Length: 147
Image (cartoon, rainbow, N blue to C red; front, side, top):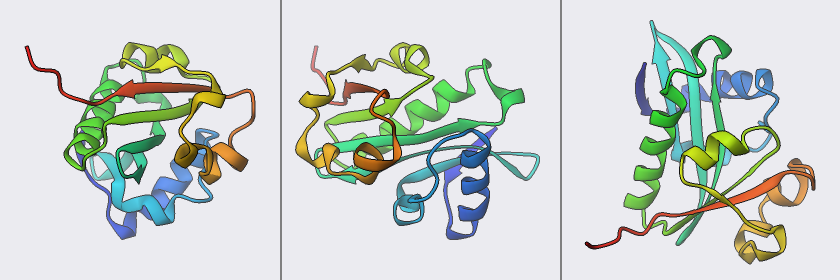
């Protein structure tokens, strides 16, 4: 799978993949500039993105075609995305999930009580409207540590 930045003409395919994965897709367009897509044989088969809010980001829309899951591709996509976020000045990444908390824990995310989310994350449409209150909030620091 080749990972590349999303382009405007990828929007419909990203939205279709998200709908098929039962993930929020309605508000992707304004954030497409912070999305990555995975292509295989010329077809869009994966995506991941984030909403950038200064030093914080809301990771969202990590999705792969079902046949490509459990092969390490999601982890590679996630790490590439988080590296991009770090380069853009993000120091803490947050996400909401109803089904993938084990996957994200393997990527270094830890559960966080929803009431402890920064105000900028609580104000997102995904947090306030699109994800159910039962979704688990998770956080990962993106600050590089010096040895």
